[in-house]
Length: 405
Image (cartoon, rainbow, N blue to C red; front, side, top):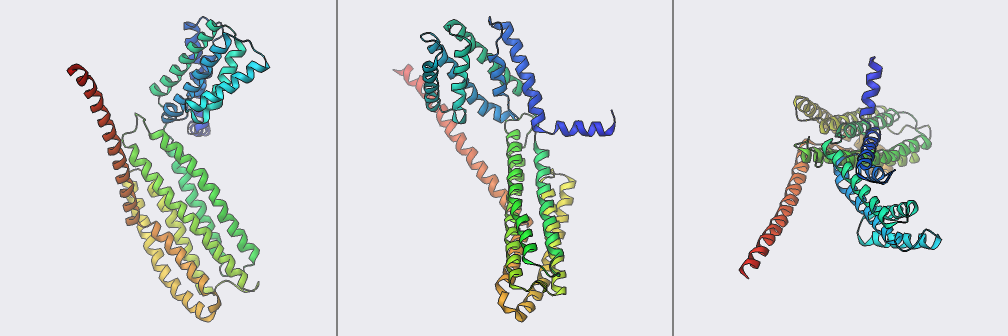
């Protein structure tokens, strides 16, 4: 197998959709084989159906949403058992079973899987009208649920941290590219349409943030309850706080683009936004902020190792250089404001926005934020342990009081 084939295979292995497809297929086939062995039905298709519903991309999702799906399927089958004993399949019985299934689904709190109660009931009622055969469907459902849960417990799904880390770094690089593009136009006559185009690009970054957030949520779920991971909480918090910081920076970049668009509206079409020396300094500053943003993303996605120390040192050096450039830019903007006082608030807002991004990426700020999140997680864990300990004491006191009575 050549190198390109190995690269393609590795890409597919890191794709959650591909891996879920393969795992769900394997679980469904295994559930069907077990159901054929244990059930008297000639075609026990309810078992693979339930296995498909239970197997999720992550173990955490399997044990949470999967269990609710099992409850919804079992509830639908039980409802169909009752109906199959007294009525046949007709338009009015179908309406009754859908109404009953949706109502029961609300009472058993299966969340977004209420519809699956009705779907399961209709499937069972459609394939059989005999109560004895319907009970076989219950057995098949339990087989499919058991196989699906064991499949993901014994063969734990992959950890999806790497795709999330790549998406975080990709967001930082995309933001850096936008900052570089903005900086290159500062000493040219900027028409309002071009400045508005940069603002539109900045607004589109919000969609990228949403996509990264979805990838990170999947990575966080893959770390929960995963036997391969010993420090899942720390990894989740490092990635989450890192994305929160980048999201704030993305919002600030959008505001910065808005300020430059407003400044372009106040200038003539043949007039540059800033004098040549100020524009060059601002371009250097924006490039430095973008580079620091990429280094920050690399830092929060790099495991604790020598590479992480190198990433931290690089970020510290880039932030220090950016602050130095920022001081020079502030003096130049002050001279510009004295010459053109009508736009003083826009020049001040540019500095405030750059300051905000640099402060958000500060190493001390990051460490303090991470410590606060760890403290909150520890407090929540202590509260859960206290509730569980109280429950155990209550269980122990019950039998003792009965014996004393």
